[in-house]
Length: 186
Image (cartoon, rainbow, N blue to C red; front, side):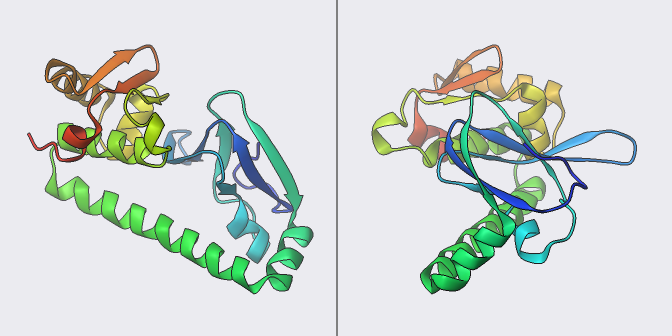
């Protein structure tokens, strides 16, 4: 949808589907920062400060989105003060998510971090859809989100499968027991 370093002249509102937010190192290695779904904004920070994009947004599955120019976005926020408050809450939520993930790196093993991530990704879905909800990420992408290798993710998923908390398929993890996954400690 947009590429790191591009000019910031639009915001994307995700209506359906999911996108991943990635950054690329000078060596060409990609790091996954997050996954965004329906109702999420992509590129809102760049639209507010007009600096080049800090990350790329890539569709993970078929995506329906609304593109809003940066000027339209800024005008809308200026005309609707309640939107500025909600935008601030969203940005604070993302900062808290990033801080919590960094804290988890030092406090939990890979299996616990994978379990927590899967629970978090499913938690945003409606209550009726949570059990049996699919997380459509590769083991490499999950590893990037929790700060571990693809091999460690494979081992973690094996443990979670053995305990009946998830089932797996190619680029997909189905959450079977959300509450148990959320409270999992190995």
